[in-house]
Length: 353
Image (cartoon, rainbow, N blue to C red):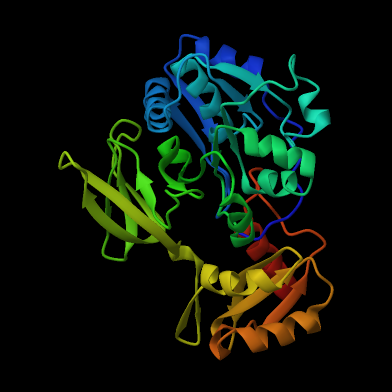
């Protein structure tokens, strides 16, 4: 995912009191909306007990304890925000809540807290929030002071990794989805324990199907096995007690493959090659082609399309080079900051008609 400096505004945003009332009522489930990054958002009804089980796994893994301070700065409309609250309930942490925004550690955001300078033990953010925060020295220092920071909802950009690797406290990238009640694996981004691999949480088993997609077996949080669309490299090791450790890398999404004239092109691979060289937000997508079946399209918020075209011709293999370049005033994003590829595809199809 390419970084932008905005978050979508959501006028129907759930507030903390509404969520707590839903959590404390007599029903056994909570309604959760998926992000809609690859299709139409869906509504799931998930068991509160499974949410508590997921929260316990994360808190145990990170060593969080009663009395720690957790910062809620994500929307409660989606699983990431909901699970932050559930973790504080499960572990008996103190919850600090600020209005979801692109700059959750700004003076304006923190002014709503009873103690703006309180030490934050644990926080979860999407990559866009981290990116925005790092543009301001004062906010960056606050980010560095968070004892355990998890980043979810999208891929962590290589430029962010370069900055975060020297942070003094643990920073983690998460892997998961709405169906897994937030994440089922964490990857350390900084310090001596930094790794290119995600490590599955306890009570989570992983495998690959015949297509190379990750299959998740997490009975504490999912009632059945979940086959993802994520192509992965999986490694299984054993700890000192002989227990299996599942380590994996995500190679890209199965549905993010462009079959152009019989050549299969992974969208993420193209974006990764271009990302260090393009300053403006962009995305690689596909559209119908009479000649090729599908063709590579680059959409960007930059107006310098000819410059970008020449860059692509230099950097990319011939068959990966976009056949079309399209300027967007704003690249569509989901509420959690992911590229809304389904919406981009819809717009491109409309332009062809």
